[in-house]
Amino acid sequence: MKRILVTGAFGQIGSELVPALQNKYGKDNVVAMDINTPEVFDGISERFNIMDKQAVVDCINKYQINTIYHLVSLLSARGEENPSVTWDINMTGLKTILDIAVEKKIQVFWPSSIAAFGPSTPKDNTPQHTILEPTTMYGVTKVAGELLCRYYSIKHDIDIRCVRYPGIISWKQEPGGGTTDYAVAIFYEAIKNGSYTSFVREDTVLPMMYMDDAINGTINLMETPRDQLGGFHAYNLAALSFSVKELAAEINKSVPVNVSYSPDHRQMIADSWPKSIDDTSARQEWGWSPEYDLPKLCQAMIENLKQKIGS
Ligand code: SER
Image 1 (spheres, rainbow, N blue to C red):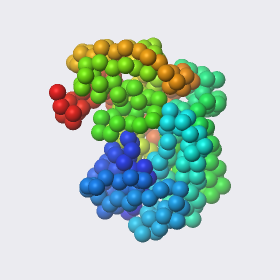
Image 2: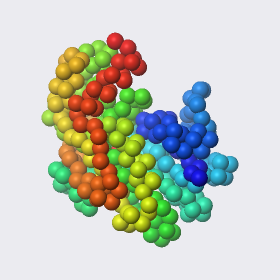
Image 3: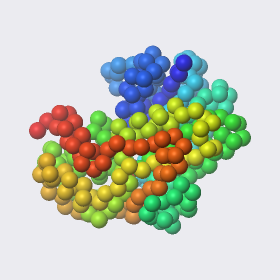
Image 4: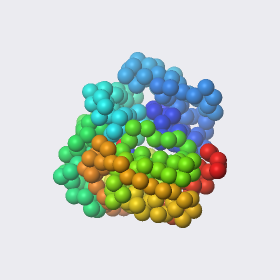
Protein backbone atom coordinates (compact mmCIF):
# COMPACT_ATOMS: atom_id res chain seq x y z
CA MET A 1 0.00 0.00 0.00
CA LYS A 2 1.21 3.50 -0.79
CA ARG A 3 2.06 5.74 2.17
CA ILE A 4 2.69 9.13 0.62
CA LEU A 5 4.40 12.32 1.80
CA VAL A 6 3.93 15.49 -0.25
CA THR A 7 6.37 18.29 0.63
CA GLY A 8 5.40 21.83 -0.34
CA ALA A 9 1.87 20.47 -0.17
CA PHE A 10 0.09 23.84 0.00
CA GLY A 11 1.86 25.49 -2.94
CA GLN A 12 0.44 25.80 -6.44
CA ILE A 13 0.94 22.16 -7.48
CA GLY A 14 0.67 20.55 -4.04
CA SER A 15 -2.77 22.09 -3.40
CA GLU A 16 -4.14 20.10 -6.33
CA LEU A 17 -1.89 17.04 -6.18
CA VAL A 18 -2.81 16.27 -2.55
CA PRO A 19 -6.60 15.96 -3.13
CA ALA A 20 -5.93 13.85 -6.25
CA LEU A 21 -3.68 11.51 -4.26
CA GLN A 22 -6.20 11.39 -1.40
CA ASN A 23 -8.91 10.35 -3.88
CA LYS A 24 -6.76 7.65 -5.38
CA TYR A 25 -5.04 6.20 -2.32
CA GLY A 26 -7.24 7.28 0.62
CA LYS A 27 -6.97 10.25 3.01
CA ASP A 28 -5.20 8.20 5.66
CA ASN A 29 -2.35 7.41 3.24
CA VAL A 30 -1.39 10.96 2.27
CA VAL A 31 0.57 13.36 4.50
CA ALA A 32 0.62 17.01 3.40
CA MET A 33 3.75 18.80 4.65
CA ASP A 34 4.63 22.47 4.31
CA ILE A 35 6.33 25.30 6.19
CA ASN A 36 2.87 26.86 6.63
CA THR A 37 -0.26 24.77 6.83
CA PRO A 38 -3.88 25.98 6.78
CA GLU A 39 -5.99 26.04 9.97
CA VAL A 40 -8.57 23.81 8.34
CA PHE A 41 -7.49 20.90 6.15
CA ASP A 42 -9.36 17.72 5.33
CA GLY A 43 -6.54 15.22 5.79
CA ILE A 44 -3.23 14.69 7.57
CA SER A 45 -0.91 17.69 7.63
CA GLU A 46 2.49 18.35 9.18
CA ARG A 47 4.19 21.72 9.55
CA PHE A 48 7.99 21.95 9.47
CA ASN A 49 10.91 23.39 7.53
CA ILE A 50 12.47 21.15 4.86
CA MET A 51 15.91 22.30 6.13
CA ASP A 52 15.19 20.48 9.41
CA LYS A 53 16.39 17.00 8.46
CA GLN A 54 15.39 15.43 11.77
CA ALA A 55 11.82 16.69 11.32
CA VAL A 56 11.74 15.08 7.85
CA VAL A 57 13.07 11.77 9.25
CA ASP A 58 10.58 11.84 12.14
CA CYS A 59 7.68 12.46 9.79
CA ILE A 60 8.71 9.63 7.46
CA ASN A 61 9.05 7.24 10.39
CA LYS A 62 5.80 8.35 12.05
CA TYR A 63 3.70 7.63 8.95
CA GLN A 64 5.82 4.79 7.47
CA ILE A 65 6.18 6.73 4.24
CA ASN A 66 7.19 4.77 1.12
CA THR A 67 6.52 7.40 -1.58
CA ILE A 68 7.52 11.09 -1.59
CA TYR A 69 6.44 13.87 -3.94
CA HIS A 70 9.06 16.48 -3.10
CA LEU A 71 7.63 19.79 -4.31
CA VAL A 72 9.30 22.33 -1.97
CA SER A 73 11.08 24.91 -4.12
CA LEU A 74 11.64 28.61 -4.62
CA LEU A 75 10.73 29.52 -8.22
CA SER A 76 12.59 31.49 -10.90
CA ALA A 77 11.71 35.14 -10.26
CA ARG A 78 11.68 34.98 -6.45
CA GLY A 79 14.81 32.84 -6.57
CA GLU A 80 16.77 35.72 -8.12
CA GLU A 81 15.98 37.92 -5.10
CA ASN A 82 18.12 35.65 -2.96
CA PRO A 83 20.05 33.11 -5.02
CA SER A 84 21.93 31.78 -2.02
CA VAL A 85 18.76 30.89 -0.10
CA THR A 86 17.32 29.43 -3.32
CA TRP A 87 20.30 27.10 -3.68
CA ASP A 88 20.01 26.03 -0.02
CA ILE A 89 16.29 25.33 -0.02
CA ASN A 90 16.14 23.71 -3.45
CA MET A 91 19.31 21.61 -3.21
CA THR A 92 19.61 20.81 0.51
CA GLY A 93 15.93 19.91 0.59
CA LEU A 94 16.32 17.53 -2.35
CA LYS A 95 19.49 15.93 -1.00
CA THR A 96 17.83 15.36 2.38
CA ILE A 97 14.93 13.59 0.66
CA LEU A 98 17.24 11.49 -1.54
CA ASP A 99 19.44 10.43 1.40
CA ILE A 100 16.41 9.26 3.36
CA ALA A 101 15.03 7.56 0.22
CA VAL A 102 18.21 5.49 -0.05
CA GLU A 103 18.01 4.39 3.56
CA LYS A 104 14.31 3.54 3.50
CA LYS A 105 13.89 2.46 -0.16
CA ILE A 106 11.38 5.21 -0.88
CA GLN A 107 10.05 6.05 -4.37
CA VAL A 108 10.54 9.77 -5.13
CA PHE A 109 8.92 12.25 -7.51
CA TRP A 110 10.81 15.48 -8.05
CA PRO A 111 9.81 18.23 -10.50
CA SER A 112 12.35 19.77 -12.82
CA SER A 113 11.29 22.57 -15.16
CA ILE A 114 11.72 24.33 -18.48
CA ALA A 115 13.93 26.60 -16.35
CA ALA A 116 16.66 23.94 -16.71
CA PHE A 117 17.08 25.27 -20.26
CA GLY A 118 18.82 28.52 -21.14
CA PRO A 119 19.57 30.93 -23.97
CA SER A 120 21.90 28.44 -25.70
CA THR A 121 19.21 25.70 -25.81
CA PRO A 122 17.37 25.24 -29.15
CA LYS A 123 14.13 27.23 -28.69
CA ASP A 124 11.71 25.26 -30.85
CA ASN A 125 10.70 21.68 -30.20
CA THR A 126 13.49 21.50 -27.59
CA PRO A 127 14.88 17.94 -27.49
CA GLN A 128 15.00 15.72 -24.40
CA HIS A 129 18.80 15.68 -24.50
CA THR A 130 20.14 19.16 -25.18
CA ILE A 131 22.22 22.03 -23.83
CA LEU A 132 21.38 22.88 -20.20
CA GLU A 133 22.91 26.28 -19.42
CA PRO A 134 20.29 28.18 -17.39
CA THR A 135 20.75 31.80 -16.34
CA THR A 136 18.66 31.75 -13.14
CA MET A 137 19.60 30.17 -9.82
CA TYR A 138 16.28 28.31 -9.94
CA GLY A 139 17.35 26.84 -13.29
CA VAL A 140 20.78 25.99 -11.90
CA THR A 141 19.11 24.06 -9.05
CA LYS A 142 16.96 22.22 -11.60
CA VAL A 143 19.98 21.10 -13.65
CA ALA A 144 21.95 20.20 -10.52
CA GLY A 145 18.87 18.45 -9.12
CA GLU A 146 18.42 16.40 -12.29
CA LEU A 147 22.05 15.31 -12.08
CA LEU A 148 21.73 14.50 -8.39
CA CYS A 149 18.61 12.41 -9.03
CA ARG A 150 20.38 10.59 -11.88
CA TYR A 151 23.39 9.94 -9.64
CA TYR A 152 21.28 8.56 -6.78
CA SER A 153 19.15 6.43 -9.10
CA ILE A 154 22.25 4.80 -10.60
CA LYS A 155 24.53 4.68 -7.58
CA HIS A 156 21.91 3.63 -5.02
CA ASP A 157 19.30 2.10 -7.34
CA ILE A 158 16.47 4.19 -5.91
CA ASP A 159 13.31 4.79 -7.92
CA ILE A 160 13.23 8.51 -8.77
CA ARG A 161 10.82 9.94 -11.32
CA CYS A 162 11.24 13.47 -12.75
CA VAL A 163 9.52 15.67 -15.31
CA ARG A 164 10.38 19.10 -16.67
CA TYR A 165 7.13 20.98 -16.11
CA PRO A 166 6.30 23.91 -18.36
CA GLY A 167 4.42 26.90 -16.87
CA ILE A 168 1.40 25.50 -15.05
CA ILE A 169 -1.94 27.28 -15.25
CA SER A 170 -4.37 26.74 -12.40
CA TRP A 171 -7.16 28.48 -10.49
CA LYS A 172 -7.29 26.92 -6.99
CA GLN A 173 -4.09 28.49 -5.74
CA GLU A 174 -2.27 31.43 -7.26
CA PRO A 175 1.35 30.68 -8.08
CA GLY A 176 4.04 32.75 -6.39
CA GLY A 177 7.42 33.91 -7.56
CA GLY A 178 7.46 32.31 -11.02
CA THR A 179 8.07 33.86 -14.42
CA THR A 180 5.15 32.05 -16.03
CA ASP A 181 2.75 33.53 -13.43
CA TYR A 182 1.47 36.10 -15.95
CA ALA A 183 -0.49 33.34 -17.66
CA VAL A 184 -2.45 32.81 -14.44
CA ALA A 185 -2.63 36.42 -13.23
CA ILE A 186 -4.24 37.53 -16.51
CA PHE A 187 -7.32 35.38 -15.74
CA TYR A 188 -7.70 36.80 -12.22
CA GLU A 189 -7.35 40.39 -13.44
CA ALA A 190 -9.64 39.87 -16.44
CA ILE A 191 -12.43 38.62 -14.19
CA LYS A 192 -11.83 41.12 -11.37
CA ASN A 193 -10.97 44.31 -13.29
CA GLY A 194 -11.28 43.71 -17.04
CA SER A 195 -7.68 44.75 -17.52
CA TYR A 196 -4.18 43.36 -17.02
CA THR A 197 -0.67 44.75 -17.28
CA SER A 198 1.66 42.01 -18.45
CA PHE A 199 5.25 41.94 -17.19
CA VAL A 200 6.37 40.26 -20.42
CA ARG A 201 5.94 41.42 -24.04
CA GLU A 202 2.89 40.43 -26.06
CA ASP A 203 4.97 38.23 -28.39
CA THR A 204 6.43 36.18 -25.51
CA VAL A 205 5.77 32.50 -26.17
CA LEU A 206 6.39 29.86 -23.49
CA PRO A 207 5.33 26.22 -23.07
CA MET A 208 2.34 25.93 -20.72
CA MET A 209 0.02 23.28 -19.32
CA TYR A 210 -3.31 23.15 -17.48
CA MET A 211 -3.03 21.86 -13.93
CA ASP A 212 -5.31 18.84 -14.47
CA ASP A 213 -2.97 17.55 -17.17
CA ALA A 214 0.04 18.13 -14.90
CA ILE A 215 -1.56 16.19 -12.03
CA ASN A 216 -2.72 13.27 -14.21
CA GLY A 217 0.67 13.04 -15.90
CA THR A 218 2.54 13.12 -12.60
CA ILE A 219 0.47 10.35 -11.03
CA ASN A 220 0.61 8.26 -14.24
CA LEU A 221 4.39 8.52 -14.34
CA MET A 222 4.63 7.38 -10.71
CA GLU A 223 2.30 4.44 -11.46
CA THR A 224 4.27 3.23 -14.51
CA PRO A 225 6.20 -0.01 -13.87
CA ARG A 226 9.86 0.89 -13.50
CA ASP A 227 11.08 -1.59 -16.12
CA GLN A 228 8.89 0.15 -18.72
CA LEU A 229 10.96 3.35 -18.36
CA GLY A 230 14.22 3.62 -20.26
CA GLY A 231 16.46 4.50 -17.31
CA PHE A 232 16.44 7.82 -15.47
CA HIS A 233 15.07 10.85 -17.34
CA ALA A 234 13.76 14.23 -16.28
CA TYR A 235 11.08 13.88 -18.96
CA ASN A 236 10.27 16.83 -21.19
CA LEU A 237 6.54 17.42 -20.86
CA ALA A 238 4.64 19.53 -23.38
CA ALA A 239 1.01 20.53 -23.71
CA LEU A 240 0.63 23.86 -25.52
CA SER A 241 2.52 27.04 -26.37
CA PHE A 242 1.02 30.50 -26.93
CA SER A 243 1.95 34.17 -26.83
CA VAL A 244 0.41 36.55 -24.29
CA LYS A 245 -1.41 38.18 -27.20
CA GLU A 246 -2.95 34.86 -28.27
CA LEU A 247 -3.94 34.10 -24.67
CA ALA A 248 -5.57 37.52 -24.27
CA ALA A 249 -7.48 37.04 -27.55
CA GLU A 250 -8.83 33.67 -26.39
CA ILE A 251 -9.87 35.08 -22.98
CA ASN A 252 -11.52 38.01 -24.75
CA LYS A 253 -13.94 35.62 -26.44
CA SER A 254 -15.73 35.19 -23.11
CA VAL A 255 -14.39 37.90 -20.76
CA PRO A 256 -13.43 41.36 -22.02
CA VAL A 257 -9.85 42.13 -21.01
CA ASN A 258 -7.74 45.10 -21.95
CA VAL A 259 -4.08 44.05 -21.82
CA SER A 260 -1.18 46.49 -21.66
CA TYR A 261 2.50 45.58 -21.57
CA SER A 262 5.19 46.72 -19.18
CA PRO A 263 8.06 44.21 -19.39
CA ASP A 264 10.30 44.00 -16.32
CA HIS A 265 13.29 41.87 -15.23
CA ARG A 266 11.23 38.71 -15.78
CA GLN A 267 11.28 39.30 -19.56
CA MET A 268 14.91 38.24 -19.65
CA ILE A 269 14.10 35.02 -17.84
CA ALA A 270 11.19 34.28 -20.20
CA ASP A 271 13.41 35.00 -23.20
CA SER A 272 15.96 32.46 -21.96
CA TRP A 273 13.45 29.58 -22.05
CA PRO A 274 12.21 27.51 -25.02
CA LYS A 275 9.03 28.23 -26.93
CA SER A 276 8.03 24.61 -27.45
CA ILE A 277 9.12 21.22 -26.18
CA ASP A 278 9.63 17.78 -27.74
CA ASP A 279 8.10 15.29 -25.31
CA THR A 280 8.36 12.14 -27.46
CA SER A 281 10.13 10.15 -24.70
CA ALA A 282 7.32 10.78 -22.20
CA ARG A 283 4.68 9.90 -24.79
CA GLN A 284 6.41 6.70 -25.84
CA GLU A 285 7.64 5.41 -22.49
CA TRP A 286 4.68 6.08 -20.22
CA GLY A 287 1.87 7.27 -22.46
CA TRP A 288 1.91 10.99 -21.64
CA SER A 289 -0.90 12.76 -23.48
CA PRO A 290 -2.37 16.10 -22.38
CA GLU A 291 -6.08 16.87 -22.85
CA TYR A 292 -6.29 20.64 -22.62
CA ASP A 293 -5.78 22.89 -25.65
CA LEU A 294 -6.01 26.70 -25.37
CA PRO A 295 -9.82 27.07 -25.75
CA LYS A 296 -10.50 24.25 -23.27
CA LEU A 297 -7.94 25.63 -20.80
CA CYS A 298 -9.43 29.15 -20.98
CA GLN A 299 -12.95 27.82 -20.54
CA ALA A 300 -11.97 25.79 -17.46
CA MET A 301 -10.04 28.70 -15.92
CA ILE A 302 -12.83 31.22 -16.50
CA GLU A 303 -15.65 28.96 -15.26
CA ASN A 304 -13.78 27.96 -12.13
CA LEU A 305 -12.43 31.42 -11.32
CA LYS A 306 -15.84 33.04 -11.78
CA GLN A 307 -17.18 30.67 -9.14
CA LYS A 308 -14.20 31.28 -6.89
CA ILE A 309 -13.97 35.06 -7.00
CA GLY A 310 -17.40 35.99 -8.36
CA SER A 311 -18.59 38.27 -11.20
N1 SER B 1 6.71 28.16 -13.49
C1 SER B 1 8.11 28.20 -13.15
C2 SER B 1 8.61 29.59 -13.06
O1 SER B 1 8.11 30.42 -13.78
C3 SER B 1 8.90 27.45 -14.17
O2 SER B 1 9.19 26.21 -13.67
O3 SER B 1 9.51 29.84 -12.33
